[in-house]
Length: 388
Image (cartoon, rainbow, N blue to C red):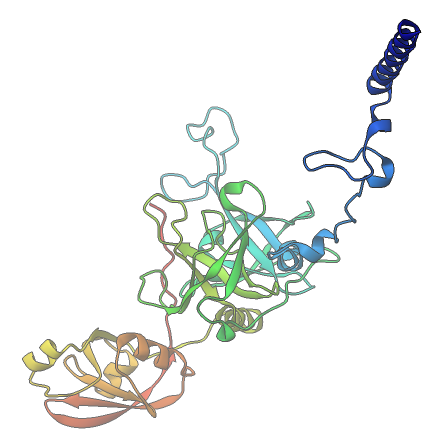
């Protein structure tokens, strides 16, 4: 009897173990607990929780994509070609005829950028981009191309105005450079090294940079947004995509960006463009004096005491200052109602005067205070810079 019970028990255990083996192998999830243990993953569909859909990318993305979208369509690439010249300086009429010694030469081409500021096709760029060009081609970001007409240039601020004729032109909104503050975010948009339209970002590093020896009239915005060759004439825009400057120059030992770039404020560019579009020239006052900073050492050497002003180092013959009676060695202290304390300040004060107007100029001469009535002339246009 005992032997029979043991046999039944053994058979039952064998059947149970066999069934457990089959279930473990083929249907392991039948043995899973309702709550997964630590370190395990729930296998049933009811226990798999998918994450909710992410917010739209534009909601969570940080950066200046919107500003770039607003400004970029109005930023163009410019190719300015210069005609070949013969050794005697005249245009070469045979540059394309085989057999002539200069036939293999190619016209020089300069690359730069520009910004469309009106729907009728007015563009701003740098004078040095188009200086001396016989052919100017503009390429838009949408692929369209057009030949540009040169409206006018102002070498002393390095601003040039072009015009193209195309329908439905994108226009960049104009900002206010005077409202910028050091630390404001800005974008530089242009065509560096002709790689195609490129957007770089940075901040306003400084304002009112001058005495850099780049232009005659300098009031630059300094930025660390990357500016490279080909960016000249392109847009410096604020975080709202508004034009605040024209990228113009970089400080570089290698030819590439070192984080010190300079842009002409849009206020200056707009004033120059208005004058060029209206009169074809920027009218500035000129009296014909060559000046130097009046240092304490110079003042002591000339026995000028504590005089404050600008030392007149030279007077151009037959210029308004010479005709009025100013002489080298005078210390110019006032122009009209405005005191002047530096050559840069004097230059700006005189340039703001209307040609043919009269202004009273105050000087110190040998310890005496004198005044002269000067008839302001039109500032002569500087000679065109020659290529090396």
